[in-house]
Each structure stands twice: as C-alpha cells, then as structure tokens.
Amino acid sequence: MKIGREDFEALIKGEKNITPYLELDPVLGSYSAFGVKTASNPNYMIKAVYEMYEAHLNRKLAVKAMRKLYRSVGAGSLGLYNLLKKFGMDLKPAEFLMLVFKLQHQQGWGAPFELVEASEKKIILRTAHTFESEVMKDWKMSVCGIHMGWIEGVLMAVTGKSWYCLETKCFANGDGCCEFVADQVEPSWKYKAQAIVNGDSAITEFIDHKPLEGTIKLIDDPVVIMPRFVFTSMMNSLKKTMGEMPAGGVNYRAYMDMGKENVEHYKKMGITNPNTLANMAFTFYSQMGWFKIIKMEWDEATKTKTLTLEHTVESEAFGNTGKNVCYCTAGLLAGIVEGAFGIKVQGREIACRSKGNDHCVFTITNKKE
Ligand SMILES: [Zn+2]
Ligand SMILES: [Zn+2]
Image 1 (cartoon, helix red, strand yellow):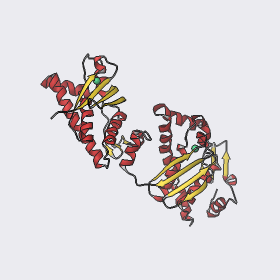
Image 2 (cartoon, helix red, strand yellow):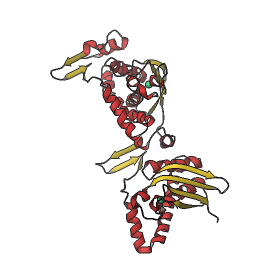
Image 3 (spheres, rainbow, N blue to C red):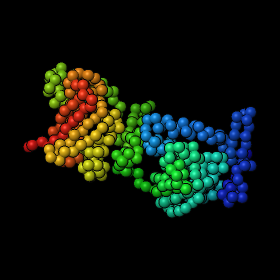
Image 4 (cartoon, rainbow, N blue to C red):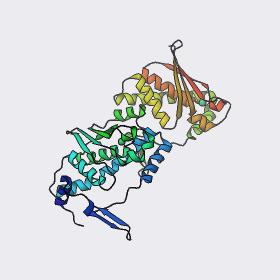
C-alpha cells in the first residue's frame, strides 16, 4: 500500500482514520497498519513483562524498568519522522508525538492524547486511560511506564535532547485520567545517582553492558563483575604470607581507602551533603551485591553508628568459620563514613554470620587522635 503526505494530513486533521490502511492476511499471518507490519496487542504479554520485572524489583521499580524498555520503542519512531520530513511535513515535537499516539491508539496501543501544554522544554499530555493502566489496574498505583518511556523515546529521537517524563495522575491509581509531564533535562550523573538513593530507580536501569566488547558501565563509570571467591582467595593468599591478624588489618586498610576514594568520586560529581554521600555509597554497594542493609542506627551518647547487614560478600564467600571474617566490609563502611563526614573513624565488626550470628553487625566510632 502506497502511503503519502495527504494520507498523514487527513489522519492528523481527523478526516480519516486508519481503518482503510489496515491489511490483514490470516493465511500469511501478516497484518499491517499504515504500511507498517504490526501485530495485535496481547494484554497477557504486557502483564507478563511487568511481572517479570516485579519478580526482581518492587512494583514501583518494575514500572521504571518498563519505562526504560519502551524508550527504545519510542526511539524507533525516528523512521516515521524522517519519512514525514521527506514529504515536506515539518511537525513540531509535540505535534509528532500526538500523531504517533494517534496511529498507535487506533491500533489498540497508545493513548488518544489531549495536548495540555507544549513549549520547547515542557510537554503535558492527558488521556482518560492508557491500555497498560487497564491491564495493570490491580496494582492500584501509577503504572504507565510504557507511555512514560515511549514519550521520552519519541522526544529524544526527534529533538536529539534528553527528556524526562513523569506520570502525575494515573487511572490505575484511582485518578480520573493518566497525565504525563515531559521535561527536557540535562542528563547528569548526579540526577541518576540521586534517583537510585531515593528508591526511584535501581542501578539496573543505568547499567550499560556490552559483553562482546568486554565493557560494563554503571552511570558512565566503568565497573567489572567479580566472582565472590575473590574474597576467600585474597584473604588466604595474604594469610599465607603474613598470618591471619595482619592479613585482616591489610584488607581493612585497603578497603577503607577504597571507600574513601569512592566518596571522593561522588564529591567530584557534585554531591556535597555528607549524609547523602554516605547513603549513596551504602546504596550503590548494596545494589552491587555486597550486602543488604537491615538497619542503620545512631547513638548520640556514645557517638556510635551501628550498621546491621543481612549478608556480606565475605560471610557468604567464607561460610561458617566460627570467626568474624568481614574485614573488607568493615574497612569499606569506615572509609565511606570518613570520606563523607571528613572525620577519622574506627570500624569494628561486633557480630558475624560466619561466626554463627544472625547478621553481620558493624560499629563505627570516632577515632581518638
Ligand atoms: Zn496511567
Ligand atoms: Zn561478617
């Protein structure tokens, strides 16, 4: 089917809809809408993808993961944008966004949006409900990650700039409509790191893994995946050369420097608040698999910070040994606090899973000079 400028113009004006442009051939198993091969919208597939993410994240983060996934779908609209340009149609980003969702909506996908506000840096769209807000209604929260990502992807593709879209009202949350606010933003490390600390994103959203290139980046910083037995191997090798106690001391010292350097890096990225610096480091290491934080307490009288961790990388690697084993973690935690607050501290492990305790518990106290 040949589709030209006049077809798009009629569709934008509402003089036509996509019905005459649908071609269905059940025998060939082919279905196309507006000249593009397509497929129907199986609700169960959408639900399955949300639930796949939910299995590893919480629901809020699962919605964000959908957003990331659909950003790529939105970016795919660049082909249509270029085609329209070739026809001599120069649509503004908001107009193009409306056309994309009109085309999608008439096929049962995207929402029939109403344009509430459009400027160079802000676009607000509203619809009675999106299809995912109906499919995922039982979550009773803002669920429209598909549309958030889709909007971001379309806008990024056609403007070449970064956009951040938030859903401010959602049908699935009991609001009267789904409303999306898209802002053009400067992509920044600080912004993403803050979202991770606030629980609005998980680090997985910002991992850029190119296995065939041999590179992994976490928010633009190169990282590596390390097997957990590195900890037993390193400890055993140090023990052989210098004995157990000095080996523990060397590990403590080395990881303390690492913790401090890590915080220095965050400072260079523009984070200044000491509590944010410390929480950021704790959150990142936790999400990278080093430990799970059960609680953090502060005792004003003794000026002691107590951290209770469900598991540490070392206690998991060593298993039950009847002794405290978490020298690296103790050093790391102490180094983070030293770096963040600019003070000298002493970190101690007072209970350890490897010793048979339920959790690994660390105290961090001011060091007397
Ligand atoms: Zn919604
Ligand atoms: Zn331990």
